[in-house]
Image 1 (cartoon, rainbow, N blue to C red):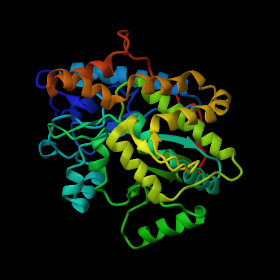
Image 2 (cartoon, rainbow, N blue to C red):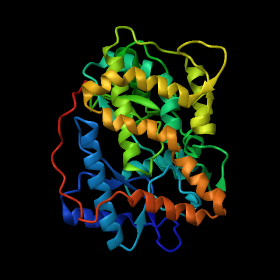
Image 3 (spheres, helix red, strand yellow):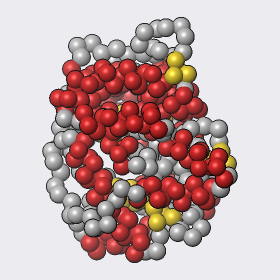
Length: 371
């Protein structure tokens, strides 16, 4: 989020920011526009390890901090801006975004929300579908860990992730259906494309989806998080889960209705969500944080093989201190000042960034397979 350092409202500075990126050149492939002109998107290259994710994210955020200050603004990362209004945002002048607004109208214009996506490479299309089916049960946990949008349009929403409430208005969003195999997925998407309902599969906005062009499973449920360490911990957690299910002979899957119910509870209550324990079928519900701790034990051997044990410890730290929504609400409850909430978001987003300036980005670590 690009912010005015006096009012802490969103500012429409993306064009000026991107002009600096283009002039620099080294970061041009890593920093880009989004739907609205008050938003920047940063993307790491392909990374082998969670440690590489940390290095690239740290470098990218440091660079954004540098050019933002040159443009007289600040930046912050969270699932929503606590008080800015979507009606005051300008749409980015790009064909994809113009078409999106023309097609979806009010729904697209209201999407003043910010998410974090993580890709994990999977080397076979049918395996990718099996992994996604197995991952569905963990969507609520990943949402609860990342939830950082308790405010919407200047009001506490009562949800830990207001972003989910807003994003749910989009068609082809939410918990994906379970597919038998990749052929069935391709058949369904092909029907949507052939009939002109969508231009291509990237107009499917499920919480999890295959990304055939990149050869990845893409996680899309997470709110944008404020701290780099939290983003890296979530990437390590997701990578470990994908590895675990990729190697399972017959990974489990659960009914979409049950997953969707747990997902709603996670959006509403965050880490305190009383969710169903689908894996054991127990009749009583339990806190989602308890399920996360159990999952951490299950993925531990895979994290060791991936070399991301240290980064995965960040998940336990989120459980101990609370997610981004919890931290925002603590500030709000202290003084009922949303401007202070945004100021602290900016301060925390920039907190760990070094003063020595960003280093130049290196090449992608490894190319993803394509299926």
